[in-house]
Length: 236
Image (cartoon, rainbow, N blue to C red; front, top):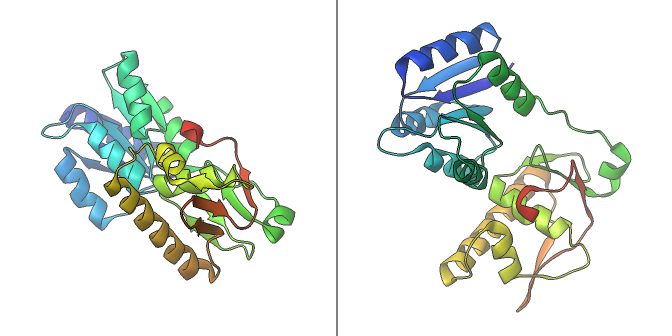
């Protein structure tokens, strides 16, 4: 089914969910703290992270934000905190699903399967003539069929440009799409993001990223990028 990491400091709940998820077919590893989680993240590959918010030393939101910005791992928050502001914070941090404790293992398993098992829509004719960005999978497909997995920040940037094919997107607009303030440091980070993305695409496809820097103005898509799977989150 899915390769899952469960971040939960309550030993009884952790063991109970581990047993249930294993019985339901998921390969699951547990972490009891943020430090434990980051150590396991370095040595294993996961499709879905199930993260408790109330953790020792570092809260779960920090894990969610890290995964959102630096990985393609799908994220489920589970928490006793059910206030609207907590849910909003969770989704803005990058969670795909927010679940309130007590957690029903069967529902959790279904949520994991839903996130890990999203099927890619097949549109050969579009893929043959254009770049394709798939929202749910956060994947960019080259006209040759080569697929590049994007981090969430890369995905937000690409999708924002893809939805404005005939426009020059200013740096200010791109930073807003990423949720960043317009500062010198943010602008440098944006340049770094674009540089790394260009390298990633070139190495994976042999083709150039269809996004150019427009000197003194911002960025522009140089080829059509077809967006599939609905509108990206956060208006990107």
